[in-house]
View (cartoon, rainbow, N blue to C red):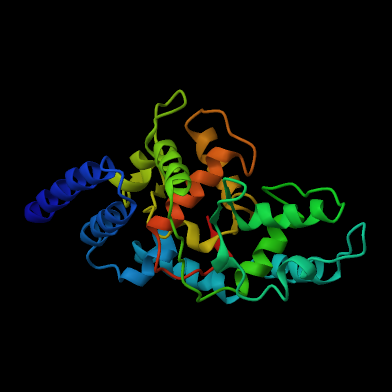
Length: 276
């Protein structure tokens, strides 16, 4: 145990040193190596399951939930919204996204023409506005349901985010800065809970590792009693450390999603998920 503790401590130092190097490829390798060494009994592909890859009892409960998952209704409603919605000009989501199959794997990406990160949820509302229709709320409701439907039909596809070119690297670094910056009255950064303290208990909860975090969204949380997007979860984390939550699809949140998605490259999408 002491040897493992020393190894993890050494890897933590190496991880932070590499993060400062501003080399996305090296950062990704160090990030993965840290978690693979911290949790040597967890299969690499299983990190998409969060705390359920770490705790046997919680995994058993989760497996039972997945037999009749509470997000199934959201998938069905999302399918109806995707296929039946007609915009002000008579067009549909299909005019922007085709059938919607295997769509999730395209996002997030850096749009060099508009110089911004584009997430799937942003693209959904961009489609609506392009065809003269008001955007949906980003964190909850119909957009989360459409996202659940599209994510379900991308299960098994591999995360493959590309960070190429100065502007994309700048967005990636902005996401990284947000991830490592302490905020709120509790003075916490994302890294404090989901890297150095991953696997530890905070009251009754186990802190999940960041590796694979983006893979299973949108998520039906038992705490919410509904399905919500990744940016809803970002906002919840901000609120928990008593920091001001940002609007869904803010630049900071999109850059953060870009950063975290790149670090989870090669893992599979398995959303929507169910969490406590």
